[in-house]
Image 1 (cartoon, one colour):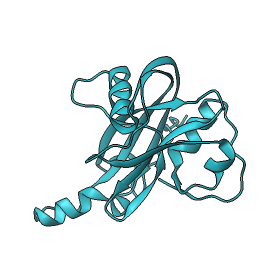
Image 2 (cartoon, helix red, strand yellow):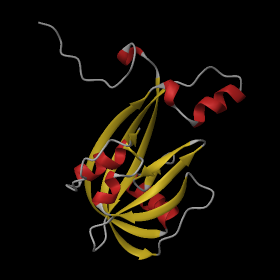
Image 3 (cartoon, one colour):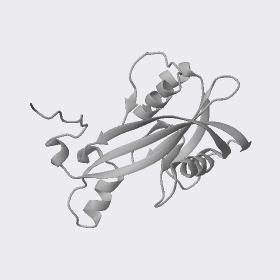
Length: 178
């Protein structure tokens, strides 16, 4: 009897390939008009709309991270309502943005693939006011209806997170990027 192998998102040689791992926590936040709060991620020449949130600091709990990241990127204080889901995506080394330039500048080997483990929470605003982040990984925050989200250039996590939350985004075309 052959042993069943777990599924993998890794390109190339599968599990034998070394990858970097990044754990992030993200929030699905809606308002009374059923709009969704998104942040515009900008890194080098790449960018797109994403869920507010981001990477955990060493030793940081994901629930603390999502509250911190939402405040940094949108200006809103939030509380967590519930865990919606966990998503995993692998970004091949050739598609990584910031690490490629840093590796070349340091004379290091090319970056490895990245496995992004994304923890998605439903959150509620408890204070603060909408503002754009300055000097961070995002440059704008805003509210969008699901119909507006459908036309945005966005990361795949937006579609995944909204699906976790039971929010339907009309299919017009696929403007997503990873």
